[in-house]
Length: 386
Ligand code: PLP
Image (cartoon, rainbow, N blue to C red; front, side, top):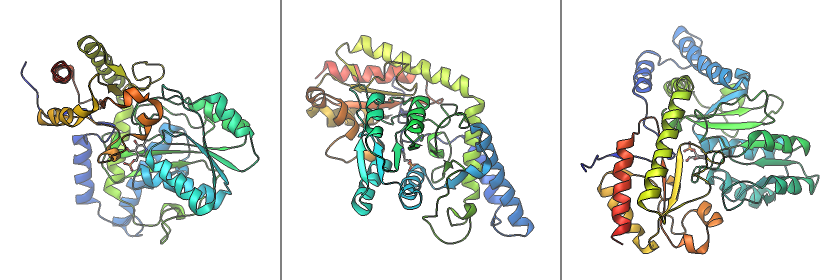
């Protein structure tokens, strides 16, 4: 079989930026260079673009534009929410899980050290799913003002949190609820007016937009103070001149992903199903990590597999894939170079499976079945020769 080179199956790390987004950003950089905070016509035209983008995002989520704030990325958004929840909203306890992204876990660790915040981890089962009974139990324990921070879609194994159930549990116990939705924006529809949720976050580079731009939704009942201090931008919550071209790029990528929502979902889901079928018959001893082969419990774009070879073969396997132009991931991108491996896999896999190499494949609208055929062939050749 002829090898197709440059197969990009690392869309949970970042996505290819849409050409229409690049064109628009070029146009904005060329023609709308006014500072959106200036009152002259150049500034006003930039301001119009920024506020239009805010309205587009708010409309999709059925919230007010004033509840959307632009940031530089998902990490900044998670930092802003958790740190401000402690500093401004009187939060004394954070309830989270061991499988959150480091953008949450390391902030929680920091707040525990610097602000003496009580931290509790809710139980997660072998499939990477939150134990809702345990969440109830943990929340009932004390009267400390609490924020629950649980991600919607896990970036490594794709397990999905039930936002309705979690929001209802948080409401019952009077806890604030933050969900890291970085992996689900553009792939799930949210009517935030119907959910008991206080904060969600987005990052444009995960939905075919530019890097260096993100947003937070903050429920209008909650007032936070800025962590970046200076001018009065973003209604005083985040100082710094708005990145107009990035905001416009994010808006277009966001609109496009919801405009083609059903079509993209069907295509990507089809790829994942095809991958599962092909690889299961080529490598029968392979395992799927978490519940990523179950559509009800896992997202349609992420597949994490555990290969039936020894971990000693990992480096060779990665080298082999890279040599053949295949991009996938060992864990999350930020895990690269870590000698301790993935904290997510460490918390859900058995000792035996941790001794085998695991790989994450994450798909986008730009992938196709021929790419899957190639990758499955590379993987099965590798497994059969080792
Ligand atoms: N949260 C999750 C679940 C992610 O997957 C990522 C990125 O991989 C982030 C947060 C951080 O987002 P950003 O790269 O925009 O800082």
